[in-house]
Length: 181
Image 1: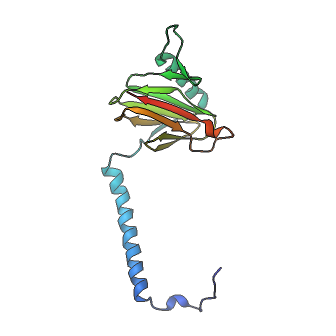
Image 2: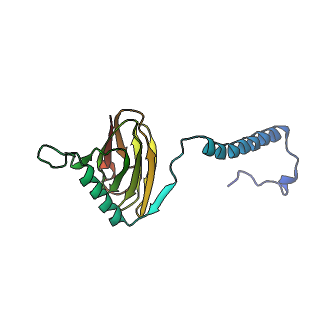
Image 3: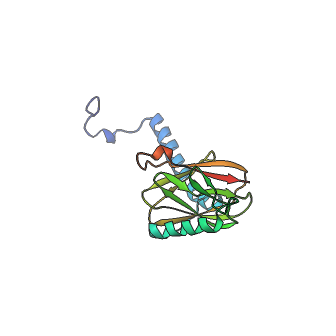
């Protein structure tokens, strides 16, 4: 709601000098940024993968279970080690699976610095946000889609995975972990 009613046909009045300057600055900035986006997308190597597949949640769930059984880190009794009730895997370079489900990320990953991985990311129930902290990489885990992220860790350390899409009453407890040696 305006403070006053503008005069009829106000848009026919010529622009003031300051209005022309600001209009030119805004238009130039808009054009530069519009052209910069495709240039940045093509020339820079910071773009996420555009590789994804449709998959049934139960199929992805089964593939993740097979991945955990194959690459799970075993203790002296032969059982797969767990951290906070979540299986721990130490896979070689290649395909790895991360499953989002209310309210956990699984498995816990132990990755090698400099090795190339293809992270298959999906959810088996609702939409989750896959946010790797503290490096602040953000992706979505969408039920029914296998989203493939190509990752080569360049820094050693412990990285937390938090869900940044509200997914239910236990959303705040949904934390996963990636170790890079």
